[in-house]
Picture 1 (tube, protein in one colour):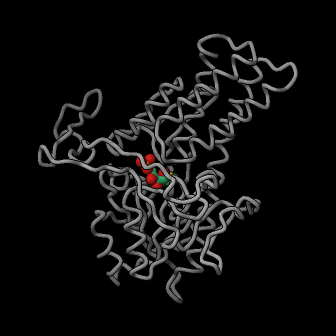
Picture 2 (cartoon, protein in one colour; picture 1 turned 135 degrees about the vertical axis):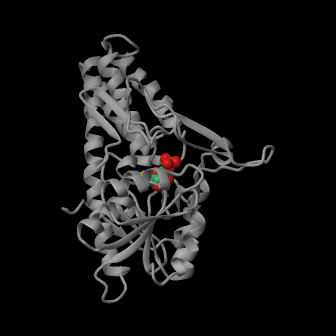
Picture 3 (cartoon, protein in one colour; picture 1 turned 180 degrees about the vertical axis):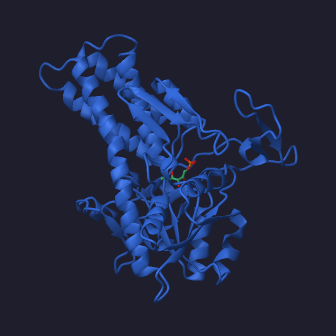
Length: 385
Ligand SMILES: CSC[C@@H](O)[C@@H](O)C(=O)COP(=O)(O)O
């Protein structure tokens, strides 16, 4: 499996996703500032990966550079510095709740330690680093459970009668590259494949940023998962094609509101509408860290707007270029100069279009009232994989 994040005792490196699938290059992240830029520029992306890199970036900074560049001593100074850096990291990208969830949880670990009698800067730094490291380990474990739960649910509820395998469609990249490993929606695909119940996976290109054609396709080829790439505009035709026989669409999430409305990569909403029309199950796979009970519905989710250039241009490796020292990338304009552009990075899929939310503690379906009980998920403890 590919590894987006490499971390060992204060040394953080990320696979630069801007260069994938052409160059596999790890870059060091030494500080919160390095982490902020890597997230903003999308060298690392995907809701869980963003949160993990942000927290480990700060952990690495604290371990090697100290508090504001000095050996941490006073508890209050250390607490205030960590809180300030967490607030700064939150400004990198707004939609994925995992980042603010991680900042809140690690902030509270810091507050608790700082309020203990005799606390000093060293102790506070230590508990922060430990909590950041644990987050990365837990994410991998959660993803494996999500994969298992989703694969079981799909075989029980979405497979054609008598079929021993299914074809599924996924969107964006939700795999090893978007998490600490294994993936969420792509983890479900991976789990289906490992149980020999995946007949075929289809992935969308995911314009404008092409996380599907660059990253998901790369993961599928890398891990030898039987898969086919389509452009976003081909999804309806694919669902209408009996020879493809798609039984389920499974996507990730950046934020699931308390009522089940889900923010995910632009194009997700359209796929959910298509799924409803074609009688195909539509599933959201996400860890509990992506479920935001404090956000009542999709109307309350801030959608990140990105640069027009992502729509008007495409980037690729220069053919025949001298690649000594690295591949040369060219950006080519493909849209008419002067045209206005709208580029929301995410959209909201109303809960009415979602059949189930796959988490590490199980798959939540709507009750007889047609509503998801997201709250109930937090009262369940994780079953063994
Ligand atoms: C497990 S990743 C879940 C989501 O973050 C994913 O589906 C997605 O929308 C990623 O968007 P991105 O803009 O690439 O960060």
